[in-house]
Amino acid sequence: MKITREEVVHVAELARLDLDEDAIELYTRQLGEILTYIDSLNRVDTKDVPPTSHAIFINNAFREDKVKSSITVERALANAPRSEDGSFVVPKVIG
Amino acid sequence: MNLCRLTIHEAHTLLTKGDITSVELTSAVFDRIGEVDDRVGAFITLVRDRAMSAAAAADGVIRQGKGGALTGIPLAIKDVLCTEGIRTTCGSRILENFVPPYSSTVVNKLMKAHAVIVGKTNMDEFAMGSSTEHSAFMVTRNPWDLTRIPGGSSGGSAAAVAADECIAAIGTDTGGSIRQPASHCGVVGLKPTYGGVSRFGLVAFASSLDQVGPITKDITDCAILMNEICGYDPNDSTSVPRQVPDYTRALQADLNGLVVGIPTEYFAGGLDEDVAQGVNAAIKVIQGLGANCKSVSLPHTEYAVAAYYLIAPAEASSNLARYDGVRYGFRDKGAKKLIQMYRETRSRGFGSEVQRRIIIGTYALSAGYYDAHYGKASQVRTLIMQDFNDAFQTCDVLVAPVAPTPPFELGDKLDDPLAMYLSDTFTLPASLAGIAGISVPCGFSKDGLPIGLQVLSKHFEEEKLIRVAYNFEQATDFHTKRPKL
Image 1 (cartoon, rainbow over the protein chains, first blue to last red):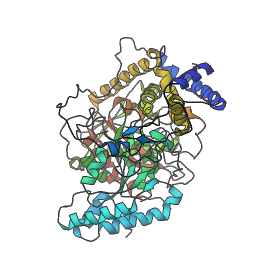
Image 2 (tube, rainbow over the protein chains, first blue to last red):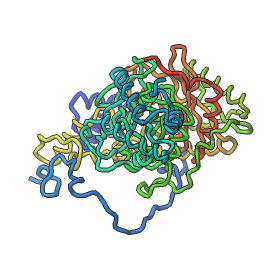
Image 3 (cartoon, each protein chain N blue to C red):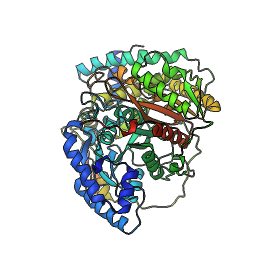
Image 4 (cartoon, rainbow over the protein chains, first blue to last red):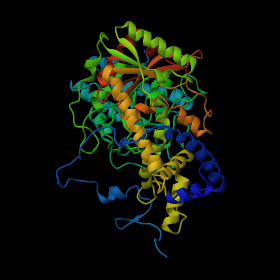
């Protein structure tokens, strides 16, 4: 299956990736090859086969609703590219 | 005697007897790293000062008679496991300066056992790759032939063990990333059953597949490390509550009555002649040790690569959405608006293979394609699991090659992602099924490159893997060979 240039651009937009012209061209070609290979899955009859998203059977994992210690604000912010007054600082969102 | 060559159990005996100290052992390991790592390139980060203090502390514990199997043992950790206070890069620019505020459960367990962490090993960026060439920082070379790949994505850990730059190492396996580099570097690597080892503090790639496991110089060390790292962790909701057995009890000489299945699909066309020869010779040895070998079929094997390369990128595209430049990691500081900051941060922070997989995964999950791609792959995953269930009805374990060829040359498949993906063909099915698998050295190609034998068991039957691998190891001498560096 081929993927079009427009689809690559669209998906990159969804994934918040900026691709330059060379990258768009390269990924369109490579993803086309990969998706053509992946098309082999259509040879498999999966009628009435349930999907598997998790290889091990486990029920919901519950825990006691108890407050536990967590890392301090200072430590949580230690890796922040920019922080101020106990908060993460980001560029303008609107406007 | 060169101390860096020791195994965990050999070093433990000498440490306990007082013949050597952990400070001496750890120094020997760092001397070895100094001697060879500019050629091998196994480590992204080394923590010598920290390691020497940990070694001195471990010596104190041993003197008090309180040492355990790992006390004072120098280990290398794949740079995808969080280590409090030691930067954890995942081989990515986007985490180049990330210093985790906490340690992964596995690292905590190792530190509690007074093991000595020497450093963080190189890997394909976010564990996406089969050659370690996708690291943003450096190339790791195969210690057996410096022009070849060490395998991946745990290539740094496997190369460090093979080159005696540590006593043992920790790797992670999503689609073969422990077993394949172990095979290519001539060491032992075990991917435990999904849910057997906590993933807490393991930077997520594909959450339904990722598992942590040991890479060691022999099977005894593998069993020792399994004893330390396995177990339920309330911090990982996918870890399975169960009694962890003493894996060293599986180190017993005898394969009588064991039924070993040989999946015919793993020996079809495309298998390298030297690999086929090595694996077939290994099967004869196993048969000679009393096992009953028989052919079995895993008919959906040929679809594993296609299913995996939709499922893993789909999960990755979701997991890697967190790298947005807000809370940690790299941020492109030039951007004036938030959305622009996201885009520039991610485009500059991620390497090309990671971007490729994010795009495949986003595509597979996107509106209009979900059922045809992700949905279909998840159904095929069920069929692959059923194949294994059927085979394990009549077999205790399965044996197969780990990789279709010996380690290929650096750069060989770098421009052809599909060719790189196809090199995972024998390790992916077990990953999709969540079952356990081990790679044990079983020979060398004509060019002197290591070949591994893969042994697979059903969920939580790692003892059978260890038993088969141990008997094979004791009957052969491949594990005693070392590369000339």
